[in-house]
Amino acid sequence: MNRTTRTFRAVLPLREATRIENDWLQRRLTTILPEIMRREGIDLWIVTTREYAEDPVVMSLLPAPMLSARRRTVLVFHAPEQGPFEALAIANAGIGLDGFYTPAWNKTQTELASETQAEALRRIVAERNPSRIGIDVSDTFAFADGLTTRDHAWLEDALGPDLFARTVSAEGVVVGWLERRLPEEIASADASNALAHDLIAEAFSRHVIQPGVTRATDVAWWLRERTRELGLTCWFQPSVSIQRRGEQVGPMGATPDATIQPGDLLHCDFGLHELGLATDTQRNAYVPHLHEDAPTPGMRDAMRIATRQQDLLAAAMVAGRTGNEILHAARAAMDAEGIDGRIYSHPIGYHGHGAGPMIGRYDNQEGLPGTGDAVLHDDTLFSFEMLIRHPLPEWDDQPIYLATEQIIAFTGGAVHFLGGGRQTEFHLVR
Image (cartoon, rainbow, N blue to C red):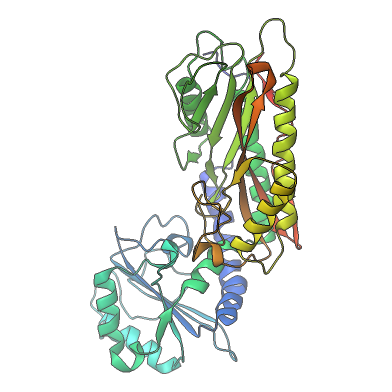
């Protein structure tokens, strides 16, 4: 492979990125979290977790540069209908929580406290006398089911039977906290997705691909290595697929060891993390023959249909609808227009497959119990992930699969395509 010559925008130094993420955390703790707790009717939320067995939600609540919980870390959030919101920490002093959480346990790093951590928790909860105490147990969302068996037993013993009887699932709080984005976070996600699109454009070019020499796996690893060189990380191994006339090279989402040839259709799936937020993008490319300067008419028709499929999903995105209702509306519109395809879109945020309403799944187009019953809220991010199947006349009606994935912001009751917009034309490797 040739070395890239494209210039990418600068990635913030780690220290500056940390400052920005911490500024967002402080704003989120004082604006988003109280609103979500009151919306869900949870007076008090307890997150208790141990180092190396972290609750999935806890890293979104810890300031950078904390990279894990310390020993047992207990966070308590109090959002009474009347009165100030509180964010309290029952943890060792000096571990990085100062300035974000009010210390609620007189425990230094070197001296024992006059009360145990469990006694401190019971005192704090009893003083506030909440009606409904949220804890992280859920049958539906893994993000809200981070209370391990031993931590659950510890919490039950610490609260005692009277207070523990008031505990309920904090699922709505966890999902609401994870999915809601600040305006600044949406703007940052827009820039991160533009960078992802630039990286894919470079990967699908002669700077990286030499037809007849470069393998699909080479391109996938180029994306991974280039992301690391920029100081960022991928949240999954990139993949590059090949579709070829008259030949089954490998399934969609696979990264074959096959060499890329003229006439191949290429597809990639790529996601990175920047400033705590994930991207997730699938784009398509064509490797023209020497006598060609564009994809075939049938390929262009397929791209038009794939774009239309995205339009139909965007039209179905209405605040207050469940993921299943959105799926059914989009599927009905696809059927009315004769589009052969599947929708398997998901929320995205701190996690690539994020918290919020699922809109179909690759192997389930009827609706998803639980995760598909969650409701669409404003100021959230989604991965528009889907595919269409289209017979290609130039390939003797061999069907091709055009899988697309584009991050959108649902804000102001409307869909906004991030990163400079969605793909409407194939990348050309020439």
